[in-house]
Structures are given as structure tokens and as C-alpha cells.
Length: 69
Image (cartoon, rainbow, N blue to C red; front, side, top):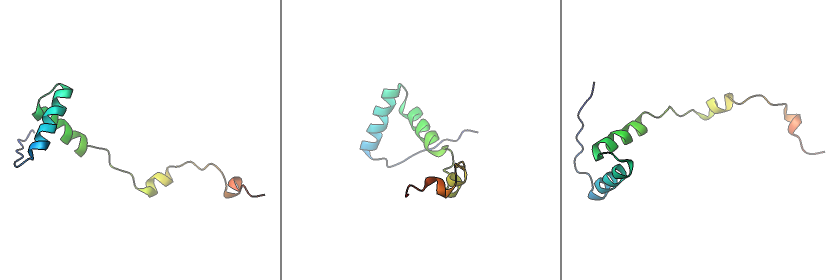
């Protein structure tokens, strides 16, 4: 279900930047605004450091990386 969204008191510089960005993408400022909101708010969830580390493959033992002789 679509919802109308009104944004008030937007700085002129921000509104102008939005219009310029929209023009470079060949769409209206309203369509550009929707695209920005969608891009920012529907990003994939960021993984925690623990999730990243646990996803790393086991590539050897600590001794395999000992460079001191």
C-alpha cells in the first residue's frame, strides 16, 4: 500500500541538489526522492564483526603463519 509523504522546511540548497540529481537521472524530483529513500532504507542488514569472522574459512593452523625461524 502506497503512502503519501510530505517533507516540510527543506533547505533550499538540499531541494536544489535533489532537483539537479533528478535531472541527471532523467526523472522528477519526487521520483528521485523515492529512489533515495528506497536505496537508503532497504539496504541489506550490516553484518556484525562476529558474523564476518565466523564466515571466514579455516585456512590453517597458527603455526602455518609463523614466519620466525
